[in-house]
Length: 564
Image 1 (cartoon, rainbow, N blue to C red):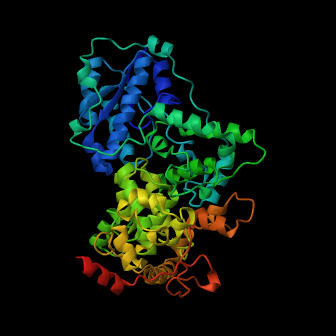
Image 2 (cartoon, helix red, strand yellow):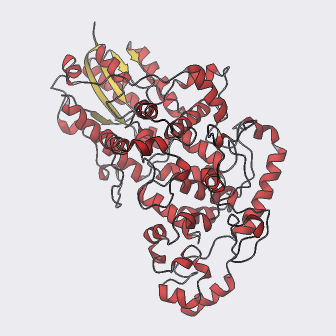
Image 3 (cartoon, helix red, strand yellow):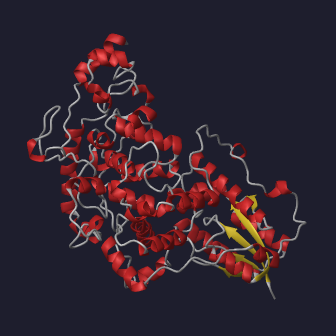
């Protein structure tokens, strides 16, 4: 007999390319789209700030409106998954559960619990892969039962598997009409998406990234109108401190499943097929999608992927425990305007450019503060709209040189890197208004501004804006020496994620990169700690790449004392 099915949305908050929902509709006489807002489940498995909650609630509202247009609706209920679903199974006479396959540990545990409950209640279970390009278990199997731990090896395995599946067919109004929901399931108020205030949350900032499938598809179509931009996209050449995103900005929608990664991938393939010359992985748009798949695969098969201890691919490093320095980094009080502007944008908007993420992550870990990547990962998890278990942890291991990335001597300069693409400091003036009146000459290193300039700018360094938290040159040299020791002592671990012949960031790039390209590709303007430099100049041996500054803290304290 046809089933009466609850389709459980977790991620995958969309109707396009939803193979599990399509299969449920084709096998059922009635389908109930349900989202269980289980706050205990969410908050015990991830840090969820108010911006992320707002994005999720907006996405649920958008999904509800899309279902309504087809003659259905979204049932949103609060409580634990098991309690809510047991009640609905009895209330609606349910015979089948459907939900997407997930790879994150907390979702895998939920999957197991739902299957056990379904077995107990005599329910069928329908589940399809929808959040990744491939069934990542197939990737691991094709690699001999082990995850490929370098990007180059990963691409070799994918070449064996072939192209990802095409997106599922479109869901139509006729699908809904074939399995309508009874109309007497209670009042509208019982199943509404709650407001932020009902969850006890407040957000004052402007909505720059509205949640939902509709907004995801609009953004996708807007970018795809410029096929040349799509075909020639090279992520390293995008600008980290532009006032508007210089990348697609689709990551929040991919993370929550408002946009199908398969839809995105195959749309890109069509454009590439029409272009004689297009960018290649890893820097192309398809390359970025494959990085996502790479980290999902590594996370599935690596124990303790989001932690250092017990993680077999991660260097075991004696990071400093410095709560005060960590708080200053998180709250944009490091005294380095480029770093503080990025962290301000993160907290206000929930998104920052990937090179900005690189800069603040390097600063926190191996560059300056020598604080564990796990602490930075937690902050990103709280604030980023696109926070993702696998990608967030994988990138923090990468950026801290704990795994995957091995050119640890390349350290972002917190002064010169931002200045390269925004010499007048428009980005800094927007996110650090306390510095908005500083001349461009000093805005990236305001501690070097003379007393009269600070007074005229209305900002005294050390009083209105903090002094630098560290001497970058000294800290970066010390940290590189520490990292060198760690890597020598743990050489076997280091080799697990290193390509023998090529740096993973250069796989697929068929031409020699110029020095500027190499700088932008993954590591930024470098402060080469092996070369001593003096105040306000670059060494001739590495002109233009070695950051050199030493803040005159004695002079700054004198200025500050005069006005305090």
